[in-house]
Length: 126
Image: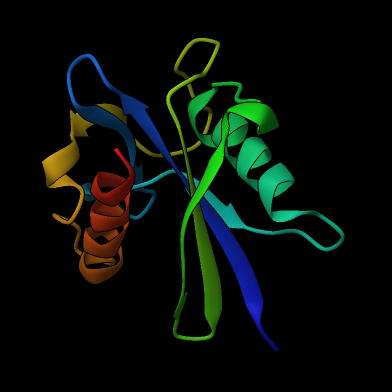
C-alpha cells in the first residue's frame, strides 16, 4: 500500500529563507513542515492542515504551487511552495521552528537528497 505525505516550502523572498521544523526526536535535524495525508483528505488540504498544526500559520490553496513529487521508500511525498502565509509562528508539538537560509535546505540528516531536489526545483521556477 502506498502512503502519501506532503511538505510545504514556505519562502521569505526578502531574506532568501525558508521556514523549517526540527524532527520531534532530533532537534538538530531540520526539514520542511509536513506529514502524512489522512484518509479521504486531498494532498493540498493535508498540506494546509499540517502547516497549521506544525507552525501555526495559515496558508490558502490559491497561494500554493505544486513544486516536486517523488517516492521515498514506499511513501509518495509531494512538496508545495508558497510565499504567502498569515498568522503567528507557534506550535504545541515537540519540535523547533525557525527560519533558515534556502541553500541550507539539503543539510538534513533524514532527507538530504530529497531536499536538494526540492531546492533545485524551486530555483528552476524562480
